Image (cartoon, rainbow over all chains, first blue to last red; front, side, top):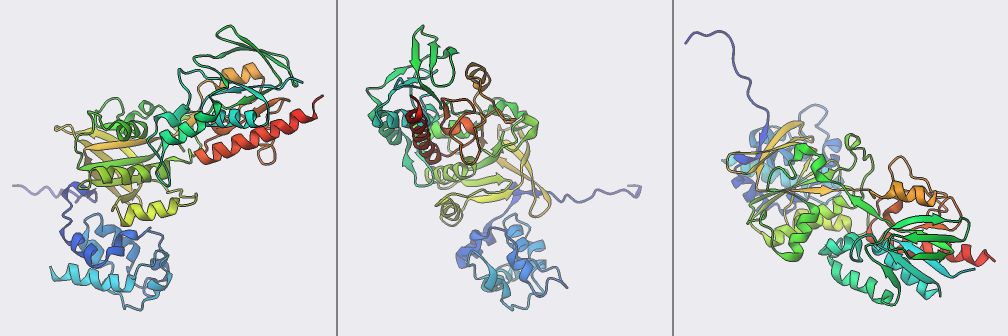
Length: 109
Length: 337
């Protein structure tokens, strides 16, 4: 095959039809408050590491619900577990614990 | 001064107004263009936010007005006279002489076919919130056969200048959440998605219903307006939207799609505005004498409004307004000689 120098760009589209919810189901059992997120962004706004890293818990929760697990976990890895986000969450989600549970559930596999 | 009052419209606003008129000693006449009383309430099964039965609510509205003169299948042909004395000719050739007119003509439902990209009337598995409510009432609809994946599209015909309806219809956000929970009760194994722009949970207990939809029923919320719907080779619906919170385009295949049709101006508003010499706003709903202090009164004397004729309203707002309308009218008539 002659290489003409062209390639297909990977799709950035979320396809919920191919979403394997196995790990999300496990995570939801450990962290039932996970589904209460209203995507307000307080957690990301209060994050002391967000100025220097890509950490964004609001987006992590969202991406986990869209089946983009790798991208989700990559947005949380620099977290120092300071817990400021737990103080501000209006839904009372224990976000610090949630981050630990996400890392446990998704990094072991 | 005559104590006779004409109520145009036999929906919740008109029924409540007629009942209040009776209590205050007036003689009310209800003119209703359709063949029965109850308006849109008669199509509904349960009411948000506390799942109260719509038919029981309607029965309670109907009971006190059993001795009131009701003209069904009737419309207004002409209105003569102004300022406190009207002679009204109805389509059944009856002429009424009244001292006041209460316009309780409500709203029309947005025709979902107009949003062609959503496929209502084209694809079998695309239904409206009214169709779903009818299914809840009658437990049968050949388009709803054990759906595994169900979507709700908020703001269909609302907040949409392209279909000439800029207004928010106020009730669809919470209705979608109510219906999403109910559909999940009937099909517990299904996955339910709500496509929304923002969730306007302004009323008492609405936010509680939203929390319950998330935590008890596991409803999935996707912030983004559905852009198009198509049918795949199996007759399933392929729905596209942007997941605006992740800034990514999104695709999901569904078995059922429910369009939350909004409230638009009553189709008859223009002719009624000509008959009664009252004005409509840019949105087609009637204009009141003052939007804050005199929101139940018309510009000209003896004309009053109740309910969604002056803009989208919830049912309790409509009922309360009907009471307020009758009080305004009573104050006005008490000053007449």
